[in-house]
Amino acid sequence: MDLKIKDKVAFITGSSSGIGYATAKVLLNEGVKVYINGKDKKKLSESTEKLKESLPGSEVYGVHGDFLQENQVDELINKLPEIDILINNVGIYKSQSFFKTKIDDWMDPFQVNFMSGVRLSKHILPSMLSKNWGRIIFISSECAYLVPEDMIPYSVTKASMHALSKGLANLTKGSGVTVNTIVPGSTLSEGAEDFLTSLSEKDNIPVEEVKKRFFENVRTSSLINRFANMNEVATTIAYLSSPLSSATNGSVIKVEGGSTSGLI
Ligand SMILES: NC(=O)c1ccc[n+]([C@@H]2O[C@H](COP(=O)([O-])OP(=O)(O)OC[C@H]3O[C@@H](n4cnc5c(N)ncnc54)[C@H](OP(=O)(O)O)[C@@H]3O)[C@@H](O)[C@H]2O)c1
Image (cartoon, rainbow, N blue to C red; front, side):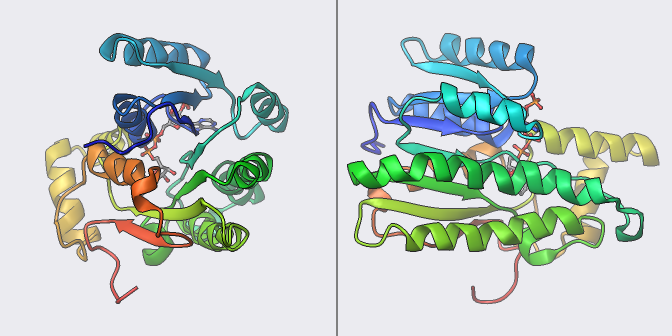
């Protein structure tokens, strides 16, 4: 499908693996110039090379920066060219009891999941508005709705992101810029695979059984009753990145397999 985004310039946070990496692949296939990011320099450069090799002729660049480190975020912002498509994808989480959370357990996910989007949007949105075209996409989570009791700080960062996204969309009134939020459900990224493997090792049960039990006992509201694959999320992100989605602004698009109940 031609998404009509050839030669646009995209920046995807947290994209040296996982959903962000899968999105980079889809955008590169559409002829977009893509800047990927990660905090591990070696992994970032390997992922950049892997994308170049798998898609010869594609323009992909690595921009290092850990969103937990303010000075690194400043450096990263200074290195970015003019961006047409900003995908605020980076996200961290921890499974822990609310009663054991420390201040940092709240501040770290806020810094990475939420403030990264604030800082980048503040820098990039003005140029999008002045050229009258741009896309900002926030990657939320089904946890914004389900709020698992062991992931309250993570869920709060994602729910806050919805208000931020809506507020920024309000600033685009009458322009060709859109700001939207995508809500993935449980998706088999490398990060999710690592989490499931740690549960499998902790409880001494095969990882395939952990996945099955997750939908039997935890994510019982899922309608697809399985993990999504990364491409299922990446293609929706790519669609919202394109002019084909030009009448969608200030919206929340779910790719959560029906796990969140209710009509909205
Ligand atoms: N997977 C799911 O089930 C799921 C469900 C709902 C929502 N989401 C959301 O979707 C987004 C992507 O999730 P994912 O599962 O693809 O994540 P992931 O596999 O954990 O993503 C890893 C990527 O994020 C980078 N990263 C992590 N911490 C970083 C930091 N402080 N600064 C810069 N980069 C950092 C990693 O780079 P390094 O390796 O260098 O750290 C890597 O490129 C997140 O916002 C997540 O909350 C995921």
